[in-house]
Length: 230
Image (cartoon, rainbow, N blue to C red; front, side):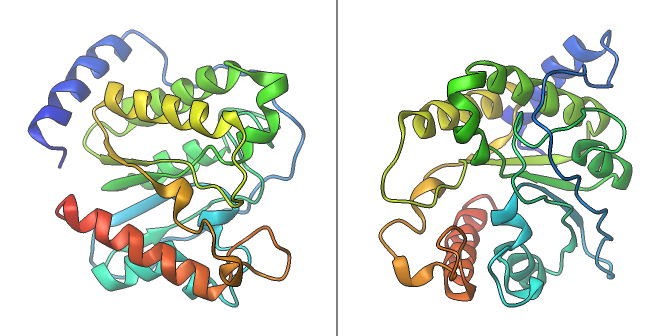
């Protein structure tokens, strides 16, 4: 369950959202490939949904079991639901918003915990989209919170993959933290630097972590989740 302070912020937001339809407004989005539905893992533990892109899907790993989300879920006895999509952003690779998109898939599962790791790919749309990214972020998070009022939300600073950091990395990360505070979610800072300066942790494509990189990300995520009592 959310912490006391988070629960207060959540109640205030839900009051505001009560008069608003929970379906997201359809906005501008770049064409892209839709993700395939995932199935929750078997077991009796909490159902944990991961809303993310290729860095959460585990692209570059030798097997899905090697991705950071599956490592931390397995260690905790969580039932993982991970429908994350390569190239996905709040505005990037969003051919539509609403029924059938990732937030709607997560809502359908009624998870106990939602981990949001979005934002990396929106850096590539920043010059075009600007604050549309923030608006889409707000719409996604509001829809999830309104539909899942009892879920615990953990919002993670967007991942990044090169030592060079465009200004948009800090801007989008700032928006992410701002919105986490607004919805009463817990926030994990620093994730954009978790694989910085470690070329040996990258897969052959030079864009995604390899098994070693995901293991390092899992170790960092594990430490942050322990701080949150998870």
